[in-house]
Image (cartoon, rainbow, N blue to C red; front, side, top):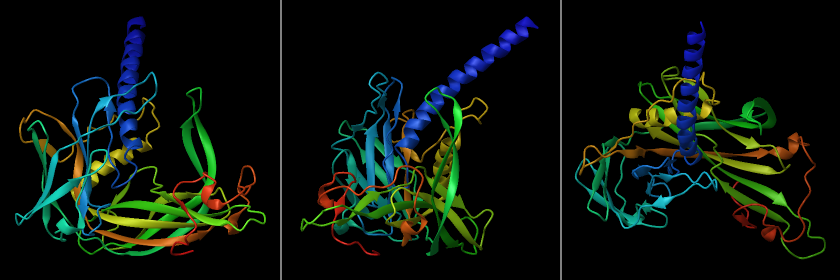
Length: 365
């Protein structure tokens, strides 16, 4: 019996070590990949650097949507708790469709390569392949990705509700954390044919006020928060084929009693892109227990043309995009839990409390 107990303990310790290692790796991935189009930055324990590729091409002629980010994996600096990022510079990146049209991607900052409007030749129904050539001569490519259509967003709804999340406290113990917020849902009419896959991203802009006294300076401003998704949101039509459904997409914070505009972008995915994104979402949903399902190996669609044994991390996808927005009147649900909101003093453009502040009224406000 003693030997059995020792073997059981040893197996549990091994399982714990295995899970800690993989959970740390996956945590670093998903923290840096919160949405459909954000760059993937992967830091792992010391080993040979690997090329990390993330990005997409869409049916919208917008460089902010049609871009690829190239980085190297790098050891995580655990002493300083720093996430290291090593961009790939001076690469040659091109996009080719199934009719042999080639489009160059122009290099930008921090390893980003964009498809500029003057080079854009993208259409629904065609397949696209990414090609990468590094300064040292190594070459990489993606498997062809079909740009599938996506249905329009039928509408957007929201509900003010309480949420219960399982988190770890400072002692490492799993506890329940309660909060309130606005759950926002996209309303979708799935097409009749089977095999439709979706991904959703959001962009948040909110209004805020400052106390200017008698000073003739702006007291009403708006802050653009960019993407506020904390995880990748995906779905398929396996259970809703041909039917109308509502998809929870994001939770808008209930913090200050002002208007909040949430814009939802809905992307089409191929089956491969959906599976890649789904596995990330699965990793995010786990709480870190040794009783969680084992982390799945996430395979991308990129490979080396120079060395078949060289591993490439990431995914390049092609998507159609549709979008819509709604303005949430948060003031009707106040007061919110916590300390009362106090307006900052002075010119609202220069309170430095929020990012990307403007006094120019955005659409919807």
